[in-house]
Length: 210
Image (tube, rainbow, N blue to C red; front, side, top):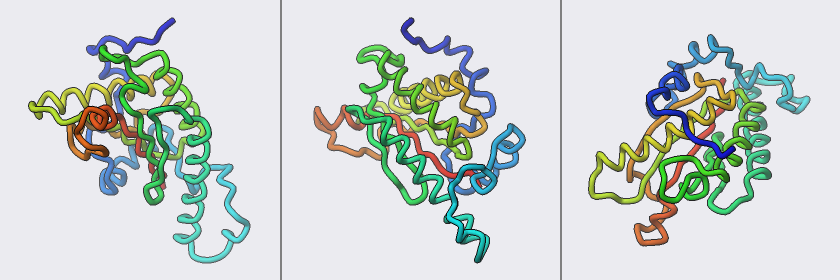
């Protein structure tokens, strides 16, 4: 059966516990008690981080940073290996991992809904993020340049929420989520015919929880 997003009126039930704000350091610190109360775990407390034996020595902050870096590197490799598809890229941004999903790679061309290919892609991402669950996730929607800034914001938020609902349906803890619509802000390509297709996107920024 092809996937269809649930009725918009029910989205709030799927996204209960998510934050509708940018994932900043301050917002992560503020959300940490809620995240832990909802069953979240921290990287330094997660089994299977494969920390080198030398981590038994030295400064705790340095050790924790090394463990988090190693954990996120493993997550990056898992995502990169699984997402070798057109319109999708996996990048590092410091400790964070960023997955860029061009809209046409995950959504129907002329309909505001997730495509069959997008359904498969998001299921793959959810499976990996459920394995690497000691992370926060910012789900941000973007559009190309539009004359109406309010319409651009609404469209970008719609994309972000659809992806977030799909992830919630596939067992991603909503206490990990930060959901934002940024409209035409932060273009990553020219605003010409080809570039516009790239600027219409969803970005998943994944940060270690610690």
